Length: 119
Image (cartoon, rainbow, N blue to C red; front, top):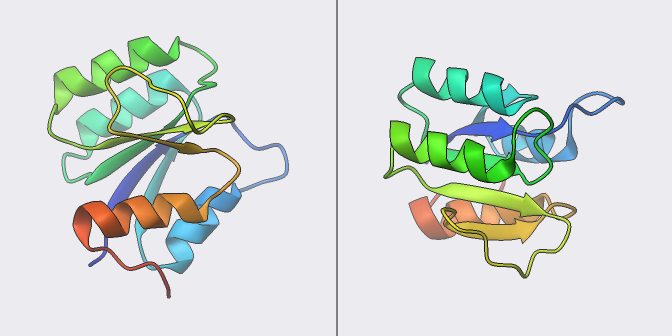
């Protein structure tokens, strides 16, 4: 199964993030936003998003504000938080994974959707 993922993260000065590359190489579709505002706008424009991945260091808004807005738009969509410390509880999110382990996103997608973890 291919999954459509909206990824909201801070812009990588060196180019595409490893997380996006891992998802795309496993044949998933990725929409990328580099701010909370852009992520929320993309989420409204593309209703077929299956999951949202949000880095806790969203630059233009507080993380919790972004989560609240995403939940208001489509409360049923799973939200995966990326945190430097993966073992934390964050209100409003379904999964918290370490931001430095891109493969962890694939494991969550496989568990939640039965999605592919390889190309």
